[in-house]
Amino acid sequence: MTTLVPDTAAPARTPRRGPGRPRNEDIDAQVLAAVLELIDEKEEVTAARIVSRSGVSRAALYRRWPSLTTLVAAALDVGRYVPPPIPTDGNLRDAIMDAILGTPLEGDNAGYPEERLRQRIRLAMADRTLQKAYWASHVSRRRAPLVDALRTGIERGDLRAGLDPEACFDLIAGVFYYQLVVRGERMDEPQTMERCRAAVDVAWRGMAAEQ
Image 1 (spheres, helix red, strand yellow):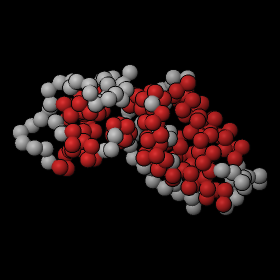
Image 2: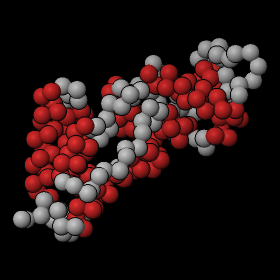
Image 3: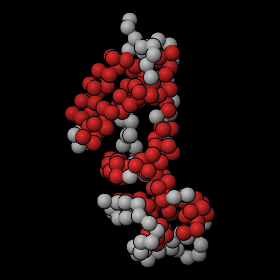
């Protein structure tokens, strides 16, 4: 299992360095790619191994990321994006359901396959510091569009007054994480998505304002 270890670990291989010094705009990409290679290969993530893989100096590494934990959190976000705002000028339930079921929360975005998501979950569960760092820098901002839409629904009376939009999001997100983490299902399987759709529909009925 990939773990964060002290910087005293020996380099894994000869540096992959081309002629001359890397251009500044390439450094971030080189480092993040090196970290993802280590994660995908289930090797220990150390500063020495990252330097060896990327050809970037240790000094340049720590100028950009204050710790290995924040660096791994940044690498795990490569290929992800912040979802656009959810339209709230029409049927809010349909708009939210489309947003959730069209891209299931942690979705299978281009460049971010499900196996990478599973590895991110494994790493986060093994390292609470990494879990908190990833939450603060990445996950919390990705939930914002859906939380904002839920808040709008509460304010205009589509959803029950007094609901906590953050708690509503957690309820919905739990539907997908349970399938992925507990049941070990693939999110691209039709039966898995149908189960998620049914569960989200139950949650929505519980949140909806009485008509």
